[in-house]
Image (cartoon, rainbow, N blue to C red; front, side):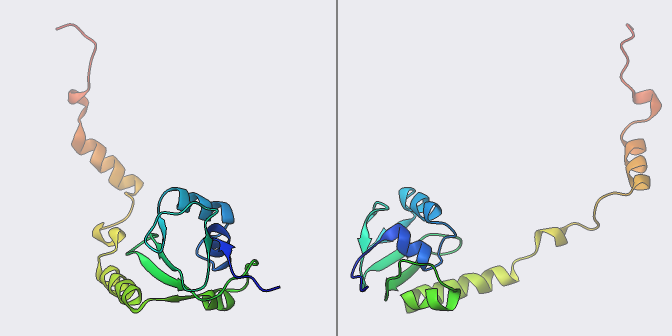
Length: 138
């Protein structure tokens, strides 16, 4: 069976941009997907040649629909359903490079979680017995 159009939510799912079709539909509802520069509804049909803008993590991805598939296949097959624009690929690569050299948040900690001994030392420094709050009237 040859198709010439397919719903955007089904296409995004089949092309493996989203794990489920309902997730794809939610992203379309949240205006994170553009078809030819316009905000679509999940039922909007796409055809080969349409430009789709996706806002996921990182910069916006712009892909051109190359093929249609009603079923979700393995990733190598799904990647044949679209062609990413050179500008989009360059932006993704630049974003990856930038994030690769950004510091890992965990490395800013000098050491991990305090040990029991460390915790006792911290508590001792915070308050001695004389610093305890008391309900006594002075």
